[in-house]
Image (tube, rainbow, N blue to C red):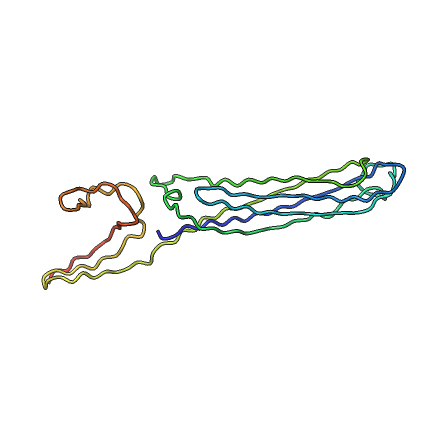
Length: 199
């Protein structure tokens, strides 16, 4: 494995409505919604930030709290979608040694709002979030290595790109001099499948 990339797709949408309940003077309202979606896993942190603004005028209270008429405003839904990508250097956090074993990538959403205008009002602000997280793995292209022999033996070897950090397969009998190796380090080691040719 030569690379791991995370992609965060994050969408936010907001529905805002307000009713002026004052009976003396017309009103002007402005509403601001601040929202973010964050992904935090291993050495990868990504955050999208979204700001929605709405403003409008309303008459004195028309007698009905319906967020409509002359004293109420129902704003059209406003939405935004962002995509972020980031590479990870902690490959081992994205690999599982047990078949079928999963790992979870946490994505969180937060939002706050502020309303400016007269204090006599009723409002409803609903913000929704949706997100997707995608992990992309990059592997080396298979490389065929030909090991020339001394006229008696020749080996053609293909690197096993699925080699991962962990324990060395005992059947490999890997050694440095007389020292048996038991731990697999992908930065300095690799498995190869070889075909041996005899003349």
